Image (cartoon, rainbow, N blue to C red):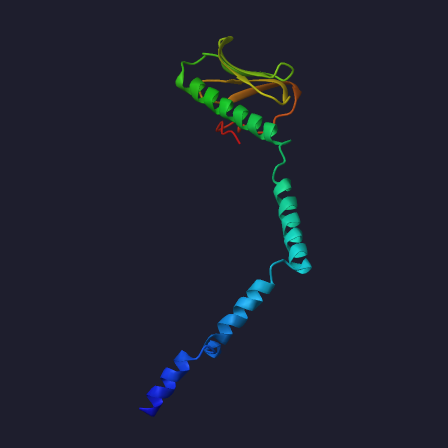
Length: 156
């Protein structure tokens, strides 16, 4: 019974903060730290600077046109080769690329079937295919960034 009275007496006391002292000290610490330290600000700026340099190096758009045009020309070569192999012998399928006008033409017997526009100047050349898919290349100027195997006709 005496123990019960002591507990009851302690609960009625206004000075019961001893049970909550760790929580109060944490709240005081959190309230006093309202700003970032200089070290934290500098560390964040350094990390953002590194990320900015890395991200800006990935946005190099100067080479995109070359890659796209190379892909278009390779696809046109493959498409024309397949058309030549599917057609009758002597059908005269060829690709004419004029670098000065930026056009890539797929022709059959000198009649244009499809036209593609290219942005870079790969030079001027003509690639013709026989009915076996074997290429014959005539280069007026420039260079070809791909290879056509003369035996298999595979475009690399």
